Length: 203
Image: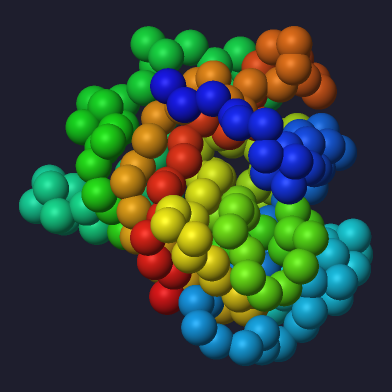
């Protein structure tokens, strides 16, 4: 398992994510590589979240990938689901066979960049990717399978936009890095995330 290094900037981002997870931040926003930000800004998205709005988007349909798609790495957030109650303590034994199959594989996952966890709108190297189902997607009251942490690799970055993006990279199950210190968070949850994509592209 990878551990956090002592890069001050990266440590600040990680500390901010923990704080936001603990405050109940939840999803609405999007991003795309090599494009200028479009639509509502991060600040406007945050205000919409506080008003309980879903940025005008409709609820997504449940869609699981076929075995052939899984082998190609074409996955959806529905493929990440496993049996766990919201805010329950995570137990690795509950992971599905699909998740064990995906661990370490190159994948493509479509979702939304969560604006409330961003500190800027351009040159973003780390962000939270969420499904868009008009429900809480990150932090207390959220399901662990509704968010994926993304760390861009090789100095690559992306920009914030308000539409879906497809993240490509290595899918990693990581029950260590995203654990609430000292292992107990709001409402008794043990983790605010357990999945990461080591991104090589966002489009």
